[in-house]
Image (cartoon, rainbow, N blue to C red):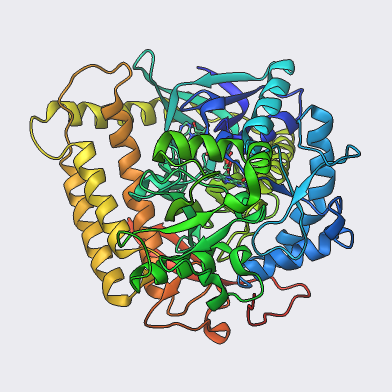
Amino acid sequence: MITHDILVVGGGLSGLSAALNADPSLSLAIISRVHPLRSHSVAAQGGINAALGNNPKGRDDDWEKHAFDTIKGSDYLSDQDAAELMCREAVPTIYGLEHSGVPFSRFPGGVIAQRPFGGAGFPRTCYAADRTGLVIAHTLYEQSLRKKVKVYDEALVTKLVVENGRCVGVVIYDLATGFITPIRARAVIFATGGYGRVYFKTTNAYVNHGSGIGMAYRAGVALKDMEFVQFHPTSLYPKNILITEGARGEGGFLLNNKGYRFMADYAPSAMELAPRDIVARSIQTEVDKGNGFESEYVHLDLRHLGEKTIDKRLPSVREICIKFAGVDPVEKPIPILPAQHYSMGGIDVDVRCASSLPGFFAAGECACVSVHGANRLGGNSLLETVVFGKIAGREASNYVNGLERKDGSERTLLDEAVAEKEKVDAWMDRTSGKMAHHLLNDLKIVMSDKVGIFRTKKQLQEALDKIRAIREDYRRAFISGQCLRYSQAVVNLVEFGYMVDLTEAITLGALLREETRGSHYRIDHPKRDDANWLKHTLVSLKDGEPEVVYRPVQITKYEPQERKY
Ligand SMILES: Cc1cc2nc3c(=O)[nH]c(=O)nc-3n(C[C@H](O)[C@H](O)[C@H](O)COP(=O)(O)OP(=O)(O)OC[C@H]3O[C@@H](n4cnc5c(N)ncnc54)[C@H](O)[C@@H]3O)c2cc1C
């Protein structure tokens, strides 16, 4: 049986960072559904935050101001010790990336360039034009080749294996051979990314189904703060490809159909650079009031920046707009609308990336440490992946090095793989029922219509009922073909089962949280309520049913205040 000390599931930035920082004397491998460089991390455009103080307007910046902005941006739901840890680590992390070879954009004089981003008191977002995720991922991947990190790509993890209350490996579906087999590991790190594909309108890649989050939940680990779903203000109409916040950071304006910079009515000081939850709601409100175009979108105007700046700082934005909307931002404003973008919630882990299940760790977007609370600031996610990926690699190594009895039993792992294979056989044996794409369509309708930017109790209750009905349909799912090699139908059905679970957790958390905080806007409870709701939501499975408990937020020195921008 294939056995490793540490298995990292996911080849994006968190997975690569974990692999590069694990104890090199241990046997480690990365498993990924796609080649590491096809992970969503490569799509990150705008940048990564650190209080370097390189921008002339950012000389007084320091990590504590970064922590304060992060906590305020989170609407005071982030755990302040975690936010402080991330922001303190940010500066050495950027220099570490630079020394590994990341080609950051530079200011004259040679220092790393920094641009303003939403919700930040100082311009502290380091970038490589608008291809920041791409260059960091390539650099870390090169480092992983240098260190000869073993990678199994095109392998879908279908289940976490637990024995005697300890994580002992995973079951995989190997796409090329069609085999469903176990891999034994002494520690498993999930770096499986977000779940954007449960919505129709999302900036996320097609691989972002969130199955890792669902697998942790099925294995008994709690999901934290799942109701907080980030909608990015500016996705390109009608394709929902991201137009980076860097475009507003460079000075872009948002205009309604009267040519008015409407952010003056919602965030008079920060304007277009208010945090994402506020800007996304403002755009949606303008559209709902009839101030949009074609009842769908508003304009992002970059024309005043000029062709030279656009080509230097936002070359991909220009290319994307021309190719996918036939609009050259040098000449015309860009049609934009909000779309699902990021998951603040995720697998409940502590600041060491450890979960309640011994041997199981998580980092990056799939995890909730929590640094982003109810709303993430742009540029903080790339930072989180590198900082907490590193911590996960080190902590998993310490765990493995301290283990007495090392391996899970072959019997348990094989039994789990057989059970997974039987599930697939049952789908193939059936000759009728619902197919994966129908099921996914049904789920996306519910999430897009009822669990969006604005929420009400009635809508959320209806959503929950529908999600539960869709789960019943899933029990009768079927696959028409019999071939197991590269079966997209198998991949989709495996992932779908986990998507139903995680959407139930999102919706249940949202239904119960009777307040408005960050990205969670309840029309029927439009105020933040610290007296009752300054706490994390934890949803776990108890006897197959979701159970919700709450945990206090860690406050260090930043007392909750009203958020004004
Ligand atoms: C378009 C876009 C632009 C962004 N721009 C920025 C930005 O400028 N700054 C910023 O801070 N943040 C940005 N973000 C957010 C940020 O890029 C992501 O949150 C971050 O890169 C996630 O990294 P990750 O390593 O956690 O996951 P990902 O990069 O999504 O990687 C997930 C990995 O898990 C693997 N995987 C998943 N499930 C399984 C499974 N069941 N079996 C096997 N493998 C599996 C996948 O193959 C993949 O390798 C952006 C996001 C998007 C969508």
